[in-house]
Length: 143
Image 1 (cartoon, rainbow, N blue to C red):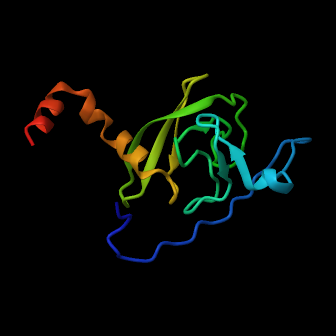
Image 2: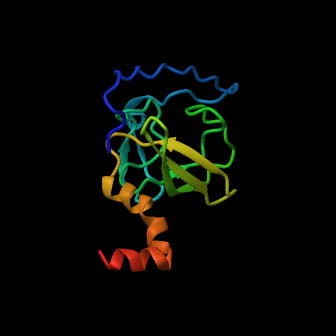
Image 3: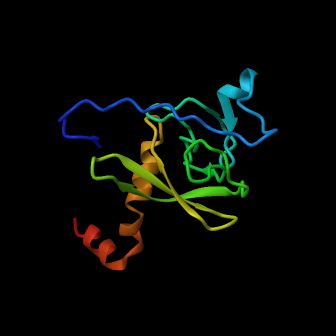
């Protein structure tokens, strides 16, 4: 599951400034700032993610919350619904992206995978279209 063909080293991700609404809290202080509780599996998830500036999903069950608007990390969405991972796709440079669907409003969003995401859950999402079709099931049965 390589990201590139070893052509050039990857640029570091630039820091993003996040503008908050008046009266909205900034980053939390104390131990809450280092982790959050997953809405799906209820595990404590570290806020720091390998390969991403903004952790936005659980690395165990890949569940997210609908908190971001158009810009990752802006926390501008009012929905706050639970978002389940429905699929994956690969960018032309080989980077994998998760597709999440909000259970409340139905909006789709894409998120970068993090380095510590559950590989089994990612592969399960990737082969889901194969398992859903009868022709693919018959072809896999003959292997």
